[in-house]
Length: 399
View 1 (tube, one colour):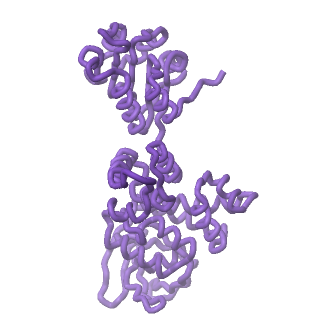
View 2: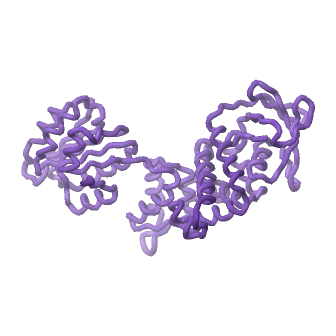
View 3: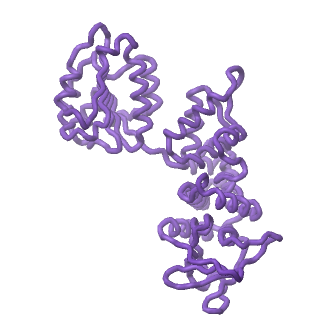
């Protein structure tokens, strides 16, 4: 018989409804859910007047399994329950000994174990016993591509709506750092009017979180999908001027996620809007439109090469060499020197190597390169262009 897997939402609903399990063991890589469940138990198990004698908080570095069992076997004083919370339980060396208590727990005790950043071995006695008598919850990191849907459901639990674009902006800007995301959402919730429908819009996010509505990863992907060179270059310039608010570490996963999903679209039998939503696990139709545009503007082989480029760029360290005064830019890569001439596109001076790289990325600009004083056509020789500039960093050139 398969073991029951508890979800975060299900556990929270039961706690609010005063349906407590005798044992909660929470483990995994995402501490946010563990902290939220623990805080909810601290608020709901005991009344404030009962906490002095019936609430015990222990830390793994300062305790052992025997001390935890002794605390859990105490009876509550003038209360229905006693609450024992063990934080940083991953530091307890003999934690498997708790299985002796978990197999037959005291129903008047609520024992909470926070086993952060690690997982218990489900084959051993402690995890097996918790599956039978309590709640064993694995707190997993949410993938970046699922963050917009998580933000929408998280706010729905608080009876607050959020626009799809607003959730995408927050996801691109904050990544999957749930603690930081929760603080920013709390800030937005306080700003909303008390009366009437509560809804978070892109304008509200831009005004209060510091995310530009026009210059963000969401708009970058949209520009790439449409092959809008002018808009893409403007975003590239903004990112390069504001590296702290738009770091490369946040943009690379967004680019990789988009193009890898785009590759999935090519191998999906049903390429309708509904079919792509199912294949990619999307909730909003606004996200599908970017993939439909991408399929019209990029071939499958081009997408495959771009994914390879992004992965290589993420793996290979690069560095800036020098900028010469004759409008050429010199770089060093793989032990060789090479340079390229600056060009213009629709009247825009592309003196910045980042912008030149950006045009190549979206396939709207071919360039001639100088190698040992000879012109080289694209796709003739593999070269690595290296720069501290934003766009040059995030995709390896393929010539």
